[in-house]
Length: 149
Image (cartoon, rainbow, N blue to C red; front, top):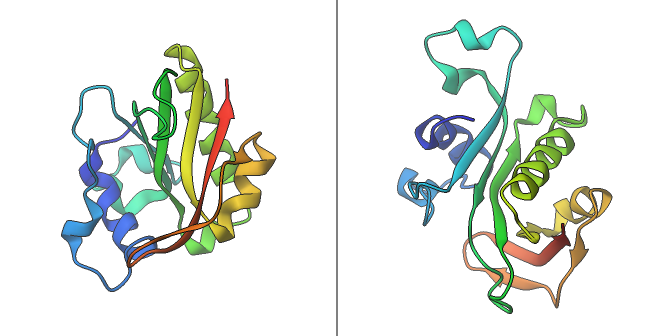
């Protein structure tokens, strides 16, 4: 687990290109139940600046599905892998870690708003598309996806 502030440079670089740093702070980032996870470069835990060593990131929030609030649900947001490290299984490992954490917390469902380019990543980890594609202004087309735990 890492702090929210450590994630911001990678969020800005990969998820909010050309936008202000303020757009990298998400609702619920500082809520006590929220968890921020990252994959660090091997040996990076000894460095003074972990921000420069993060290869992949994800945040996990205790947030119910908008369509159905009866579930103990967790939302994945801000998931990204730095470009030189894509295709090495980091995102899949991070996603599995988020799923296991949510399950350990008694979660019944884990969900996300997935960019169209990321749909297959989530599908390979047991997520299903829920509804039609929708646009997040300034970010792009997404699908809501969920996985029942």
